[in-house]
Length: 436
Image (cartoon, rainbow, N blue to C red; front, top):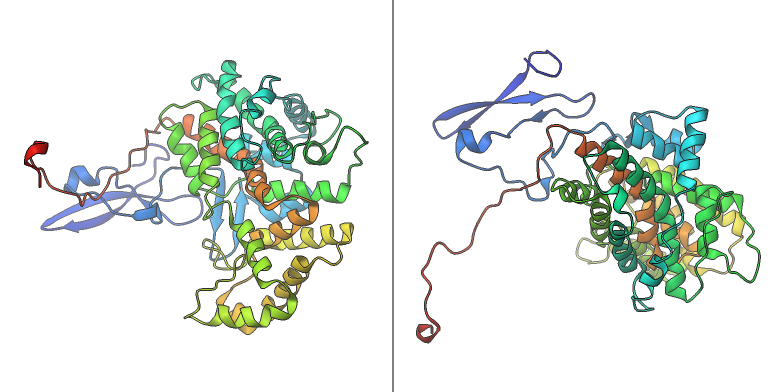
């Protein structure tokens, strides 16, 4: 019987050598069932081998669900399309943290708490000066996020639920400020303080693009686009950076250190740098007239060229986030009225071809979220070095929600993966005088 539900537990049989062993099978509310192999070594004397953990469930979670075959992404059961179309980012943050959409009063209280935590300790401004001016903004971000634990000692006791929530609110609130300061430092402009009368996305854009010598004029279309980008990137199940946050947190590390670890993982080009890679590909193509040549190269199995920003490792169908990002991208381009930008001309023509070419349709190589977000962020004025930084701002709420869920799980253990050792067997030390 399952201690949690009282239901009969299904079992799966493994035959290892001449020994039969059975292990419990657990079913989630949706998605594949899992075989509990926690006692596999005890029962068989062997470990399982799964590089990249692509067939291994590392935890139980109620936060995010992905069905890559059907192109489904749910936050706490709500389709990403509905949240992006009808809600805002802070509402999504509340949902991910607390499990339910807020009432009007809860939303107002949550927005107020986040808004009044957006400033960072004034001494942190001097912390930035220790970095070289040409440092990558993501390097600065990773360092500054980790340094938060040196400034906010009153929210690092992970055994205290109140401190856990204070740390969560602080991370969501201060991440845009830290990111904007990293950007301003990289371009040699003064830091812009947050304003409490602005919404989350508008506040962030102002901190990035305002200057003291003139009044900043908010643009509702760009702010809405930024807000949607944050929603679409808020969480994505047990990906590399989220797993990193959970693994770091499993040791009892403070939440700021855990989020810094997530930032470091996200910085990897195979994870957070995909939209930058898509823009670099557009630069390589150069102009719309060269697209047919690159389409031919993409279809040639013997050519090393690959179209970046098309298809997705998880989504075998259309990425549900890409549909919203496509609409947002065109809204931004229309609002800004970008003209004479070869990069955007290439992107729009490549998009048109990909959506109608039989090869792309058959292979399900649809433009993904990275294709559209890269174009959109460039049009909004962000350099490519800031793309992963923006990703980190959005993903912070997912990381902190996953961290909080893990800490509150009574069954959580410190992460300690096993290995298949292929090195030297035991051998004796030889003095250096006798080595050849």
